[in-house]
Image (cartoon, rainbow, N blue to C red):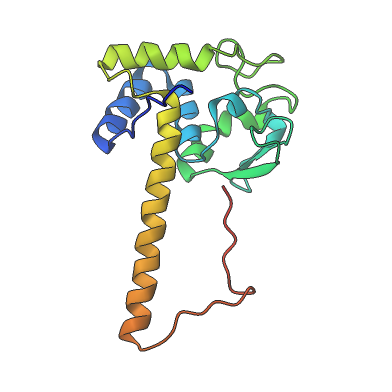
Amino acid sequence: ALQKTRIIIPEDYRQRITEYLSLNNPYFLIVCELVFSSLIRPKEIRFIQIKHISLEGMHIFIPSDNAKTHFQRYAALTPSLVEKLQYTATKQPNLYLFGPDFLPDKEPCHESFFTKQWDKMRKALKLPVEMQLYSLRDTGINNMLKRFYLLLAAIFAFTAINAQSPTFSTEEAPVWYY
């Protein structure tokens, strides 16, 4: 089997990517934010339709037919993404979010569309070839786990200071969406 050649993308590189795409390709910036913040796979993004987006609910529905795992799920949207996706509010519900020219269309963009856009940006910024679009998802997962562990450490530190044992009932347990 082939070894994965992706690497985590450090914050300073992500900042450069954001600045470049803000000026040169704001629609692809939305794609990158969906991969990084909402943890949606690029292939799943291709098939997002306007009707799957809930700006009020701050999430995107990923139907089982479009999900790699074949399980439907909801992906959370950051406030930044909700703001950037406002243009979709007036679009027809059956249009794909990203058509052949990035704008909503009755046809989804081509399978290699996002990869070509990433490669163009990567070359312009002279980023290492190991920094791939999917690396943003790996990085987003990594960052989420770091925040989760910090939160867990804070809970245990707090309970230790207060001589309490950290117990959770099923009613109190938070619901985590991914």
